[in-house]
Length: 182
Image (cartoon, rainbow, N blue to C red):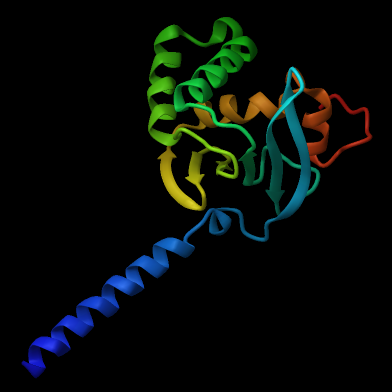
């Protein structure tokens, strides 16, 4: 009986430890020395959809260094809406250089990485230069994608000079108030 309780106590402790470790795991180890670089809001037809914030060890943000883009949602959006909106922008920015087969494959990766979001939820993408990216939902690793081309195309949605929201881009790069095109 005593041995059984001891074994049960050890099992509970191990489960608690595993839960605590996974609850605190987040994106920060992927971006050593990260500090807030920029922040802004994205609205569509007057509806505030999300707040965006970038984190990096360097400012302004630089494609040669790891960084994180954190989106905190203010509206309920389906995973499919997030995937389709991302694909539309990737297609727009990539033009003829992206085949439909590539975009279809990327859509599958995003469906694995994203979830239906509700107000207050966070999706954080970590850009790893030359490697790919990781996606975290409310601080929990959801998906790692080891494809540099996908990572660059995805984060370009916000950071490319042709981004749909130039003011948000400048703010996220840590260049708010500047007129630099790149």
